Picture 1: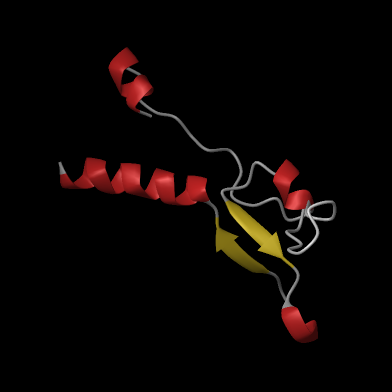
Picture 2: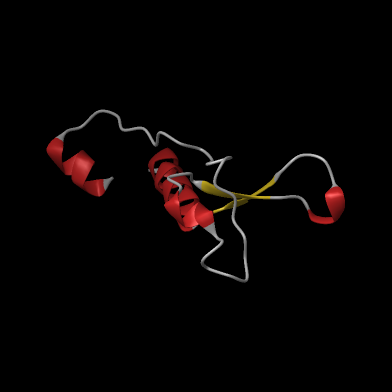
Length: 74
């Protein structure tokens, strides 16, 4: 994002919040298809048969949030 600033880009957008069809499956990297997702959060199947899906922020989520927070406070 700093490169975009240096080049005068006015806006950039992350195009995928979550890859709902590509769930994170911890424990076996061969089954963790979230690694193929561009989502800013990882989606996993709920534990214990609960309804809905759970999501967890990825590193990129925190990087985007920190960048926006830095811009808001400067």
